[in-house]
Length: 83
Ligand code: SF4
Image 1 (tube, helix red, strand yellow):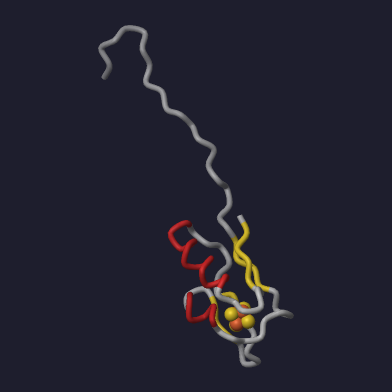
Image 2 (cartoon, helix red, strand yellow):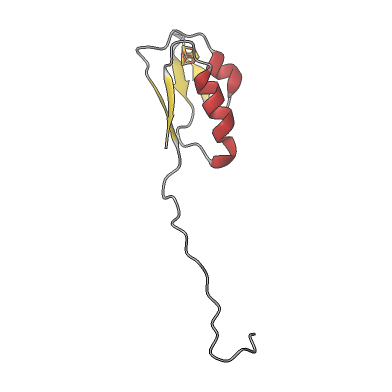
């Protein structure tokens, strides 16, 4: 309750991102080094041919730094995290 006359409680509405960053893989570039798997086992795995498999693509803010670092560790730049 506010005791000031004619005053209103207001809230600032900040635009909220409707989408999370997304991790993408260039499967043709992947050479199976597995650096990404070591960096984020919950996002990356290798298939039977040694090619990266994305276990999930949307990256919540809490995981962002770790997933970006794992993507950067790829020696052939096969992974990107897009906003
Ligand atoms: S680090 Fe790069 S090359 Fe190695 S498995 Fe991951 S995506 Fe493929």
